[in-house]
Length: 354
Image 1 (cartoon, helix red, strand yellow):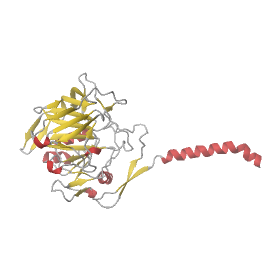
Image 2: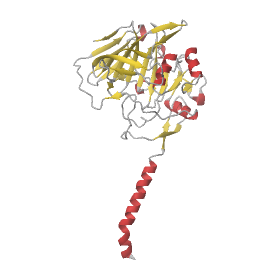
Image 3: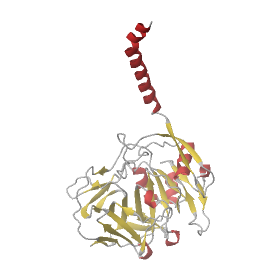
Image 4: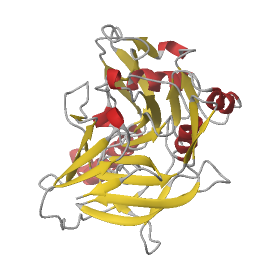
């Protein structure tokens, strides 16, 4: 009997190993659970439904920042944020993959749209109302659009069901909350956890599509030997500058003469790439404006300490196509992995890099 067992022992071990391998493969398909305690929004929240993905796995870089992260397969969530000085500092800015800053009144104030893939900020805000120009940019990124009401131009578009969106006026599934100590209407906040949970309950797709910007695998050595400052001529308290730190290969952001910090962690916002997208803006109905974000125009790209003069393009016939950036030779821009800021600049506003 013992001889028979000894004879078939290698075969038995092989069957056990095959079985363990099959079990391991099956186990990787389980969904991940996310636990997040929010001090301002009640007890711990549990969310499931987003497939687990390790940073080392194939295709695990964010399509918007090029950084490896466990959540790189998540669908982008784009949140409208206040530009007003009274709302600063904003919460969640340092954790966004990509941020747009654009005029909401011609020759006057700007507002931001932060787009999240990799990170899950504990708070995001102050959340503000939608404008129709941002909708076109968010659609191009296949994002779920988050806002607190909006202009009738924006709401007319959204009411037609052109894209998935979450409106704080309806506050589906308790997605938003008011934060004490901040004057209304700038006290409207949310969190990534709340938005993801609401998206799932609303039946929205929460897995992203593969449509990535281009990023360097090996970052070239910076040609900058001294500190340089990029100044963008938005008026008054909305004026923006970036100070290039060659040691960190990052652009430190300032707004209205003050460091742009994140309310969540106190860190100064540090972009790896800045794009000045130059286009026209015109006033409509007095309090609103209309910005050309489709078609094409001039762009100035700042990355790795250098300035690149190029162009931006976005298909006017299909708003689901993303915004592209090209160099003077017509080659698509490669970005340094990290946060991208797009500053939508009017043709009459100065851009200085020195």
